[in-house]
Image (cartoon, rainbow, N blue to C red; front, side):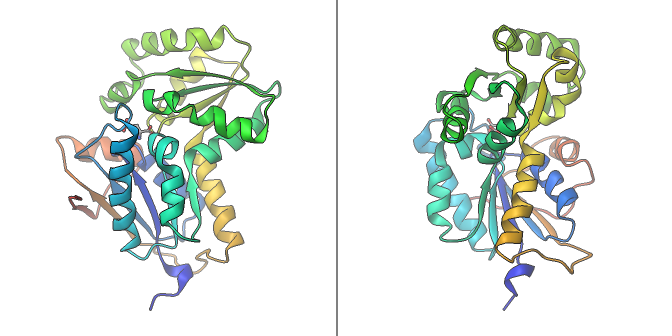
Length: 269
Ligand code: DGL
């Protein structure tokens, strides 16, 4: 029987993008064991229907619960947007953190004029998820959202500082910058990699990176539940994916910021 604090944190995403959240968790909580599932066989989720995403999510959550995780981190904005409530229901009482709840809270804390921009996948924007999460805390806040479907493939291509990406970002930001937003939420796992470019294109706007804010929220939730692992200098990291596509290693390491070992394939459903 493993002591509750020594159990791993379960982190999941539609693919490799959630490794930006794993990276932030490794930095903020260096003693925690982590088990990650990325649904690389069925990515992208950002253009799929709610019913399909809910179905896939239930399979992933079952898989992670089978690993005796002590908490779940929904690293995918799209999953959090449409299936976050289902994850909480299946998890029973264990802490469940998600990028949208954490990002919404951080955006409100950082914005001075409470005029906030959100960029995300089409499904996340259509679900109005960030606006709902922000309005639940501050009904006066003004939110403008923009779906940026081209950014996921550009980031996966590694075009982080490329003219094509710069022009695409400029086009997507136009309607947002026409509003007096002072804060921009990066509402997709892939966008933290575009921070340098976004800073150049929107120099006066505060960027909210859901990965770091989620890691912070995870630290608080585990602390409050008495589940922090405080004596584990050599943590165990396991990465499960439903497919190992071409260039997986290169792309994954770019998101994780370090070498990606212990990858296992696991098909669900
Ligand atoms: N992980 C997704 C998100 O954060 C982006 C990739 C996808 O569309 O599945 O919204």
